[in-house]
Image 1 (cartoon, helix red, strand yellow):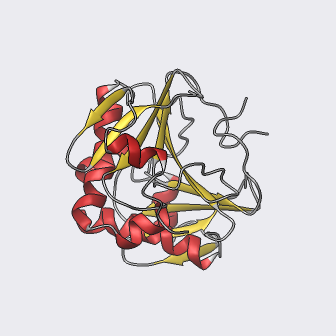
Image 2 (tube, rainbow over the protein chains, first blue to last red):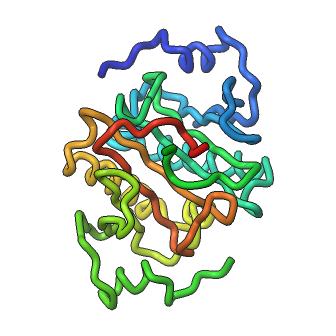
Length: 119
Length: 119
């Protein structure tokens, strides 16, 4: 899959579409999911043109990879999630239901999250 | 939560308990989950004493962090998951149902995986 610079997360990163921002630094932007699956549901996107986890971990500079995962930790801390717990999810491709072709991770929390997969 | 060197993944890393190994390098070990939630269900654990995603991304050396996420990509590729897709999941703490206090990530695939959370 090639990177499409007109995907919705690219537009959010460029400020062309608004978001409910939770956190931002030089490596990543975090904002609320518009269709939350839990009381806390945040998307974290790296500031770079990467389609997927596969693409990101293969091709992103080390500083961006470290900064992205560090930003995820900071988002969870900012939202006071570590004490009760949270889940991070990354979807790659069709079987996982990846909807936007810009690498992103979900942070979910605020309630007991149940099993790994929907039945 | 403090790291308990007698957790089951530490014992697997030390070879004290067997596992169905999928992949191993200097940074990570990957093996089949004993209670698979999907046709492909692999656990990836870093070679270091980290309780959680929070602990790992805050305290692991950069080389180990990069090596761990790179190992996850390699496992997915080795299992031919990128074409149809796969999901990666990390559980931190009670709300997420983290069972073993050694940081690990799940790789799930081999079928359409459904929504983000169980209902």
